[in-house]
Length: 307
Image (cartoon, rainbow, N blue to C red; front, side):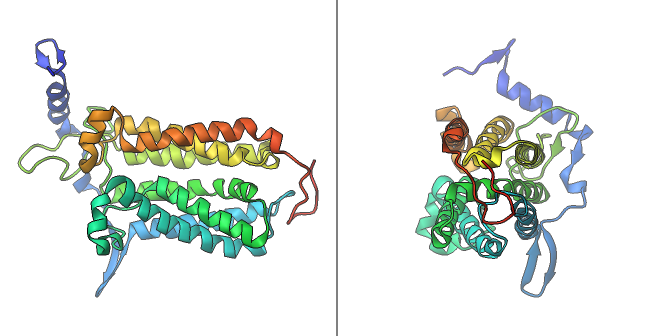
């Protein structure tokens, strides 16, 4: 198939050449005081990626306690510690297995690679599945409404997303497509050795803003300024829909994973975008059907029942 053209020049090489030509005017990632490791002591290395997960879980747990103190909570404060264990297990197991299944199935031929969490990273979509399964088990154990438990946890997840995307940026990974925008960043080792590195979209920061800050603001407003928490499934629906739309949009500015580049070219969308489609549809369903699930809420915590 013949390449599209812009005048007499191929379109893709023209865009790449323009990005390379302006790369010297952009910030170079190598010049930033950022390193993946916080410190190394002997054989132990603490990475910012680990700090991001720990910070997301701890701050999420703190915020969850704030939510549970409000009228109509689906569980008591005493449930929070147990819930964090189930959620953390779901994040780690689901996130890692999701990455292997969706992005690197060849790892199943080398099982020990699966245990190396820094080798490729985690899949958010797999983490969602793992966390949901963990929350369902938790709710069944304590005889709680699993959908309302999901609503409250959904309000806390943006913290982890924000810190996780910042860690991606610090690691210099998951960078965006070549660009000549003023805020483009020249990352390292994005092209074959010997070629000039182009400026690229800092797509990690785009995702931190949309999936972290904007999504948290949406859920904060829905929880604190509306009665959404009394409609089972509405908050988690807003989260799933909001994340799906944010991730689907940012993927247009992000390079596909190298091993899935051919998949993206054949299907027209990145793997991350295809995985967001069921999230968007599922989120819409949960929001539109939430009102019919509303019943009189007798709180596990708090002091008021709410019609």
